Image (cartoon, rainbow, N blue to C red; front, top):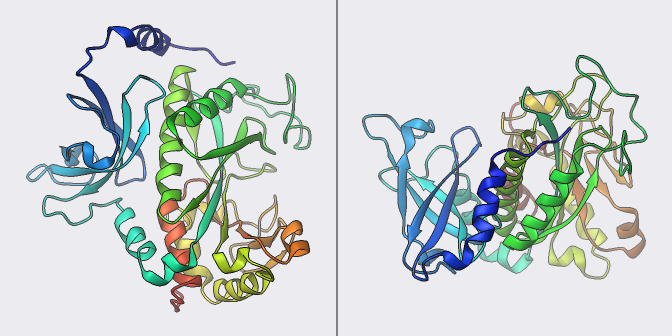
Length: 371
């Protein structure tokens, strides 16, 4: 059962006090990624509107408290990179997604955006116009860590009636999902859909299409908004790739990908070429597709529950048990996109999009030891 908490007081205050805000004061909430791929934020009051990242000043924080610096040299820089409307404070207030840098302006631990942008800015990548769409799966938990709607110490009936389900006993947490959807739309996040997933209390939303670095910016901000919404319902969000052991689906971040050549007539030939490039370096990708360098994803990629095994690479048309799937309609139209089903729900979208581009467009080769 979902219950709102004192954040409702905060919401009522912010929604009812917009006209009372000083006309020369604006609140910017700086959001960044820590060393463990968690989200952090803090807010400051500015005396000018923030519309573009350059409008927000560079700031800093105590990196020793986020495992990104030592106590003897603790200040880390946070540099604004993307601006979104604030769906919580409303008005002209904003959410500012930031890069984290060490004192000497080298990327801090957890900052993969710099490397991703370096790849996306290469001329051959810009010319290829890579598009991404990510299907973010997640599970909603009670504060004690138990999936909402599940009997304490027990299980619900087998999977089957929950996927895209409707009605009591079939879905749990729809209020969180709907609130998140509307908040993302208000913020300007490129969210494009939601659905209940195969495991009860598990959901999915989709972000995209986004070109290049934009997919990482929008997915990270969508995660921040989701976790903030969950606060208001006294629940928590987990992106664990296998939140419940046993005969239950895991949680992924299926990544739809295409280049301009794939989207053009007979682009399916380019898809086949990309698949062969994927086939030659599976372990590099698996390590990049999971926040724990593949270890958590091992619990999910077992060759069952709509996954391929992490031990072997496979591809197919309309096959949700393959590593790479070409949707049926893309095969029929001979162009479109392919779906990489391997990324885990807890993946870093910057790392995922970067390795895909480096393999398929920049033609980087070489694999690594199996995970």
